[in-house]
Every structure is written in C-alpha cells, then in structure tokens.
Length: 105
Image 1 (cartoon, rainbow, N blue to C red):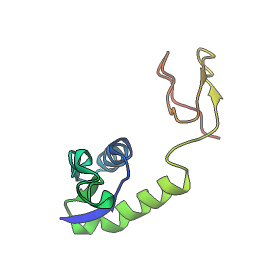
Image 2: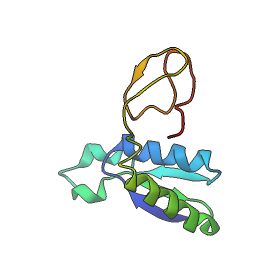
Image 3: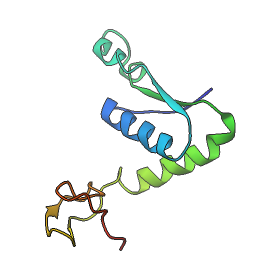
Image 4: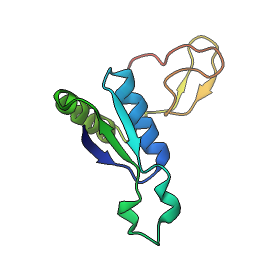
C-alpha cells in the first residue's frame, strides 16, 4: 500500500477515491474521522488520505490526480441537456433529470 495524496476536505478525498475505483485502481481512505481533532493536532495531519493498494497502479493514479487537478476538480462549463433541455452546472457529467451523459465538446 502506498499513500497517493492528502485532501483538505473529505468530499474531495471521496471524489478522488470514487474516480480511482471507477478506473479500476483499488484505493481506500484513511483519517476521514481525524478532522474532528484539527486544532488539537496539526491541521495537515488531520486531512483525509487516499491510499492505493497496488504500487503498480501508482503512475496511473498520479496521472488521474494530475488530470483532475488540472481540470479544476471536474468543473466544466455549464451545459444544457440535449435530451430534455435541462440547464446544468459544469460539475455535472450527466443530466439529473433524464440521466443523459454530457456531450463531448
């Protein structure tokens, strides 16, 4: 097992873990409950950590993390669903109303 990164927020860590899992990279979270101790312990020691199980996945995991950070954690432009014409914020990759995937640019 090897630590990939620390995240400042549990939401961020969970999102990254989900992306790793969907890419077939086995991962898990550590320290997700330590945020309650921030102030008693140094803040950066309380941040959630994302670990990967297999060292052979490290390069792919780092590339996924770099892509995600370069893309501002998944933020894209707002878009309108071509199926039901629902307006959606940029972070959504699928329409919440009808389920259609965001079209590729």
